[in-house]
Amino acid sequence: QVQLVESGGGLVQAGGSLRLSCAGSGRTLSSFAMGWFRQAPGKEREFVAAINWITGSTYTYYADSVKGRFTISRDNAKNTVYLQMNSLKPEDTAVYYCAASYVLRATNEAHFGSWGQGTQVTVSS
Image (cartoon, rainbow, N blue to C red; front, side, top):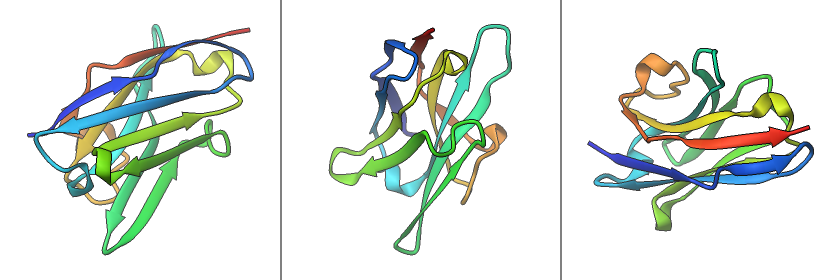
């Protein structure tokens, strides 16, 4: 089992940037497909981005709503996955969760078995 801890959330004005971090312990994150999800008040949790490492190559996937604005990346030395969020919009306001999956190319929430506690991102207009 891997333990995940998110950080980096906060309050930012529209058009601003934040970088979320997901630190792993107990297992090496490169063993998993890693994903970011978010849940806004009154809405279901939704997929944001995912990163996979398969036979030495990195594959990334993004929700259409964040494509071109968000970037998912990893730092193996720190056992950490990041979500760089640029050009933030008020509709990006949500609790952001980091998650780990054993399923290659996973983007479906049901395939992620380990979750962090979440970090709040609030974008003001």
